[in-house]
Image (tube, rainbow, N blue to C red):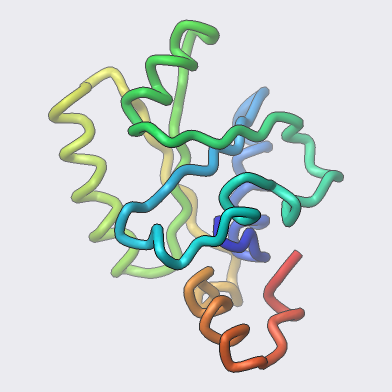
Length: 140
């Protein structure tokens, strides 16, 4: 979520229909760490306050650390992955398989993005901003 945008919002709305509690967890992608600035890492200022989800966390460890933390608090923990297209599915399925090889207790649900948001990505929004082009139609 760097930044959180309308595609993320649609997936989150769908997740809130499926689960009684949704925790938004913002972590680091080590391949993209140079694209972040300190305020974006430490804040959730771009997530709408009207969402049913009331808990947001920032984590710096691995998905395994996050799972260990929440599996002590809740009976069942499920990670939600949104996807836009077949490239996202291929990438996320490979990640899923490796994660499940390491810890078969971790559950995932994959949710497709809303129609009309398939082309929106956080990296595209950041690139448009670097060019001083408007991104208002994509951001929440």
